[in-house]
Length: 395
Ligand SMILES: Cc1cc2nc3c(=O)[nH]c(=O)nc-3n(C[C@H](O)[C@H](O)[C@H](O)COP(=O)(O)OP(=O)(O)OC[C@H]3O[C@@H](n4cnc5c(N)ncnc54)[C@H](O)[C@@H]3O)c2cc1C
Image (cartoon, rainbow, N blue to C red; front, side, top):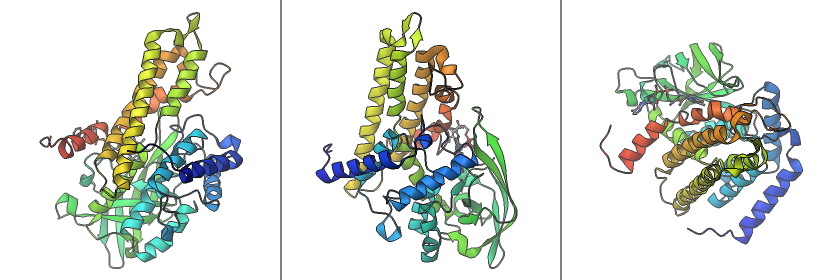
């Protein structure tokens, strides 16, 4: 592993940092990118789309995408630099389902017509996507999904229900897993469709988090007509397509390093009054925060190791699962530490003189565990690592 940046990479960092400093509107900055990964209101959503358009114009969107599809084929190190600078600038989470998951899946599996139709609109934030995989009876065991797509000649007729669909309230389109052959073994009867959310027969109902944030939804499909040209990948070959999407999802969740949260927690521990002093006076607290900082650094280097493999042209390994598992579990440890370090200050639910960034710590306490469930639960990641890395027998 080589940790030194070349002069070109340093120049890339300087250019992006400078561009963000000059162009990111102050009121779009977020205290914590773990909050509001789905915009809290339509107005915020639209401003974030406008922000993506501005970034796109300046060439800072989809940098990892191949040049023939509108990206700039950025190197892996440039992608790391992009992530670091974007987080350091406290820029908001982009409506990224299309950029991070659907676009790359279409690049891999799509027809030329689909690439031409969808990819530019994803980059330009003209079409925002949702992911319609999970169902009430199919989460970890995704292949049990029951949403049915019947072959009706030139189209499929879709009936069923999806759940936990993040951002569906804003989405223009959804990548949908459906059952096209109920008589085949469960992994072999699934197909993937690209569905316009304005098609008659689609109903979206909100599911609100304990924080009060409208993050995800139930989505119902009643006699929804989907033209056959919107099939992505082979008929009944949707399981492989979904594996591509999930691989990108795990890799993109691993890109988020919570070191910014730990830095802010350190600053709060030094500042906030507790029992006549500050939390920082307690050596056990200092040790705990130091351990969290070390865990973030370890995560950063685990990601570097994974990226080095990719740089050498080796196939993606289990690092997506390692990063997804370690990152989300670390998020929970940070939230638990915040509760202990900040005491009652962690419960403040609106910005105050002492806790100007409230309710971020309250949100962490209430909601950090959600990321140990999304994109495959911690137990499922451990199963993958146990079976595929350690060679343990199937559970
Ligand atoms: C914040 C968030 C956003 C999400 N966004 C989306 C989205 O946009 N689109 C979408 O399609 N889905 C989304 N999901 C759904 C997510 O993918 C599922 O919640 C997840 O796959 C788990 O499925 P489940 O909720 O049905 O739990 P279940 O699969 O029912 O699991 C229940 C419990 O059993 C455990 N378990 C299950 N099977 C095993 C096993 N084989 N071995 C050991 N333990 C096991 C699980 O780990 C879990 O603890 C989101 C979820 C969250 C929390």
